[in-house]
Image 1 (cartoon, rainbow, N blue to C red):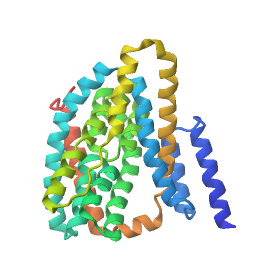
Image 2 (cartoon, helix red, strand yellow):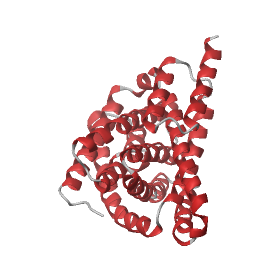
Image 3 (tube, rainbow, N blue to C red):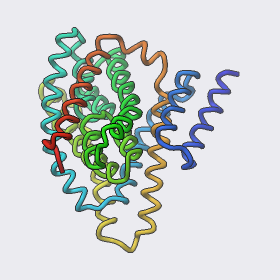
Image 4 (cartoon, rainbow, N blue to C red):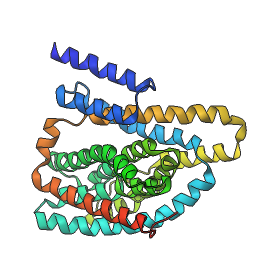
Length: 310
């Protein structure tokens, strides 16, 4: 009976979040409440669906963005992300050694924090081949911090009176997963959403060189997965900018992208459970928290001081 109830409530949650009447933050909170209350009947299917939906939603959001602004934000964001990723990788390595976290788990947590959360962990893990426990540690750490960031960042941004540009930059540089960056930025404002999404995608591109270096260092022949959805996002922005005849269709696509993102956040929330937190362990989680806190704090200070601007 409990299993039946969990399935019914899961589908009700999916329908409500797909209806467009639920905000991204509410969808995440509802998903977390579900994950802590019920055993997930479709855990792996939910994870696969959220991965596909996230990419589709990002592409759809591209139909609401101007290519000139995308290029400007992406070009500047690429430089900032290069610096932040380099610093994060070095700091993560040092923290992992200091706290005695296993090498593979430490590297996955560091890559996930520095680049783009679960996507980076998935790409790197296909090369380094960690065991199930190390995967659980790294994914659980990043996943928990993502959920915290989605709820915490907008509140901090409003409290500090950050501009739309400042918040978009901060979210893109300091939040792990693309879904949480887009969710937090969407809650803050339309301009923050555009900047946050574009700079975050510039950050996500670093999966490719980091994966290539990792494969070379480990002498792995694993094929690197290219993030093709970023190219599709840019093509959507091209259509929005240079083909005005499709304005009505672009508006619909952009709206569907926001709805898709809301569903993704619900699915992500349902995957967070007591077991996830229990399996992470104190040391890997402490590494993730310390690394994230340093990146979030320093990037916020740099943005407020005017050192990082668009």
